[in-house]
Amino acid sequence: MRSGIVVIALTAAVLAGPAFAKGATPDGTWDGVVERSGQRSALAVELTDADGRWGGTVKIGGITSPLEGVLVQGNNVEFEVPGEGVFVGVVSRSFFVGSVSGGGSPGAFSLMREENWTDAYGDPVESSGP
Image 1: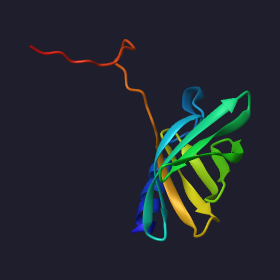
Image 2 (image 1 turned 180 degrees about the vertical axis):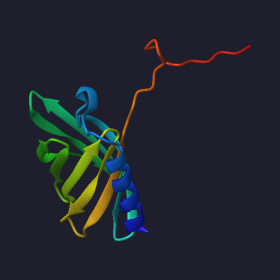
Image 3 (image 1 turned 90 degrees about the horizontal axis):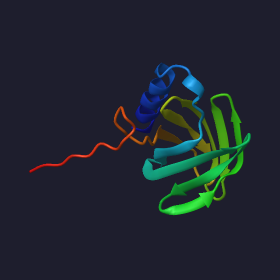
């Protein structure tokens, strides 16, 4: 099952095309899952870029931790989470997929960019009724 999820996520990332179309970068909020030894956990990553100095936080299993050693080169992203291991992945538009090593057992993660949806005029879509 795990390998099927990884294959689907990697295929989606490759098919998504260029990583940083129209000035997009990996900074932002990413939500998804990390899977190790058949166990899935919710994973949220916040990547920040302060004048080329990358940082951020991660939330795994309800625990938020700072990212360490964040390295971004093109569409390749690497960071370490104390006690969880080293995460190495590739960003392609709205997908961020990769592997995790250390921290117990190897695994894989698959994330999607969290988007703020607005209408064509930049206002939140609201509905009202009778």
